[in-house]
Length: 108
Image (tube, rainbow, N blue to C red; front, side, top):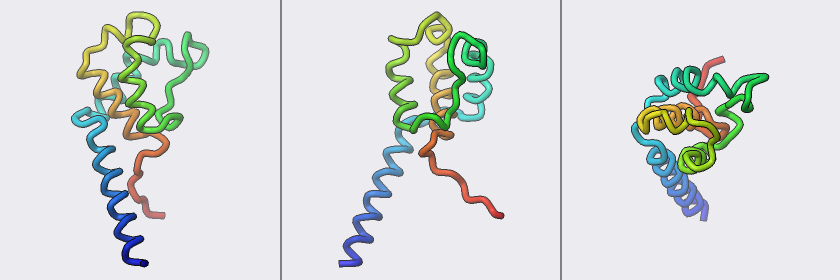
């Protein structure tokens, strides 16, 4: 019984890892962080037209959903003017830093 439980947990974790890896495949998180500051911070800041964007306030799935649906709901033209590649990079940065993103082990 114990071996079956461990096997099931292993399969679930493997499936979860594959699903997350496929979600935003190919984006450049480093570039995305820069693009987010350059392209989005004009409105998304304290006292700005929109609330501050914090990656850790959404899950990885929520960030992916936002980028799939934002083209229809985001006000203004800025989001429409950003290239698909740049959106993918911004999405990757937010995805990698989401509240449920796996974090690297640190010492001390």
